[in-house]
Amino acid sequence: MKHALKATAKHRGLFFLFAGLTMFCQTTLAQVDQNKGSRNVKLLDTTSIRKIIGIEGKSSNGEYKITIPQNDLDVKVDGFKIIPAMGLGTWVAFTPTKNGVMIMGDVVVTEKDLGPVQQEIIKQGLTSTAIHNHFVRNHPNIIFMHVGGSGNAELMAQKVKEVLDKVKEVRGGDPSKGTASSESVQNELNTEKMDEIIGHKGEMNKGVYKYTIGRPDVKLTEHGVPVSTFMGFNTWASFQGTPDKAAVAGDFTMLEDEVEPVMKALIENGIEVVALHNHMVHEQPRVFFLHYWGIGNAEQLAKGLRAALNQTGKKQSQPQGTNKH
Image 1 (tube, one colour):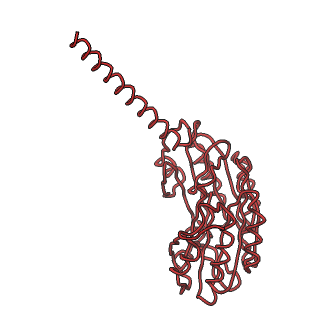
Image 2 (cartoon, one colour):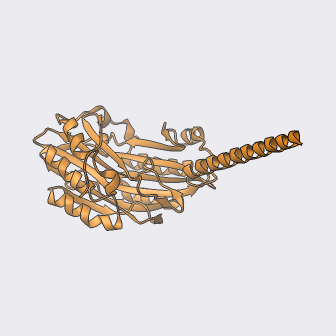
Image 3 (cartoon, one colour):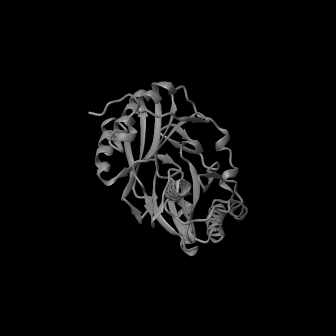
């Protein structure tokens, strides 16, 4: 009898152990699925995408992006040279979906390129979700056109290639073959002080000091597909110049109730808002983007940016050690 009771207890213990392991595995798998945005998706075949488009890209968390610096353009704004690191680059990103991929991108065009590239986007069955400027008083005039689409990965890569080839055709050459990326701009800024003011750390590239700030407080989707920082859902700021005379250009991402407070904070701190627009048309929740340009004392510009950041995602955007009142 005692042996029977011991055996029963042993079996009961094994049962609970097995049940516990099963629940752990199910929870772990659920978490993995949740990290993928609750999507049953396949890994991107980045090799095929790279071969079709002919451009080496970068991967991040299962997504893939190609970037084309506009090295053939000589752009100046208020006496400051705008090199690719300052926000003068075409990019297209791929994220996996249940039925293939979703693409998002931003294509840099001149006034001459705009019409033909628009026509090519429509011809390829892609969508143009925004057309806007990033600067004012820029010479030559540069326009940024957002594109989107979804479908088979190889087919979408081919469509992207056709659009990029149209830019080359109208521009008279490959935009990446120029010399702008080999140039550096003046940067004598106290970046440690600026990091302290803004509450984030930037990266230096050719004299441009750039901050990229995500919005982890917002779970953004387009057509139900999660949109990451890598796919363009971020606030960024690029600085160049000296402590007394610096320039800042960038893009803010905002929820609908943040638009007015952000604009007010920037303008009151002497930073021009040069564009307010969307990047997507089927996003949830609604998000807006604005581009800004400012010239002046570097620390004052940084404080203006910080004031605007304080109006968005307040819990996550506060600098460490700062108390929100």
